[in-house]
Amino acid sequence: MGKHGVEILELDVQKLIRLLNEALCEEWLAYYQYWIGSRIMEGPMRSEIEPELLLHATQELNHATLVATRIIQLGGIPVTNPADWFKLAKCKYADPTDPYVEVVLNQNLEGERCAIQRYKELADFTNGKDHATHQMATTILNEELEHEQDIEEFLTDINRLKEDIRKFRL
Image (tube, rainbow, N blue to C red; front, side, top):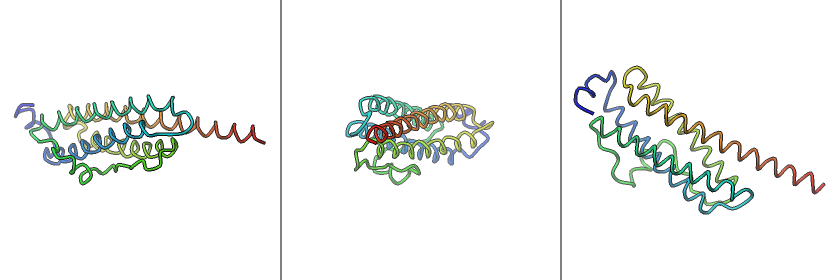
């Protein structure tokens, strides 16, 4: 983005770059959480859930690309040291020490809900002031909302399966 493009923004550009760097760190952590969770996950419906988690991981990586590009366009520098991801991220990484599918899904659901809040705040902050960042934030927000719904549907299906098994045993 050229100098004039940054000058016409009606917001604190340094604050925006800080918020975007926090989001960038969260995207990298979300990518890894999805990816590693899909690799080690155990339990019912694993074969159906694994491809969806890998798709979510790819989408989180794409979000990181969009956010890093926007930081550079605004004249900032994306976070360059992975050690800083944990320091700057407001959405925390949940170590999947219990590989049971429901645990992994619930950890990812918590992360998605945090990401939804992050991109709502970015969209609100840039609304009417920075159209490019606003559009990016709402695009990512819509994908995070889809991820939340996907996970909730898997959890509902697993609970239904467990109820059906209990009924069968009685």
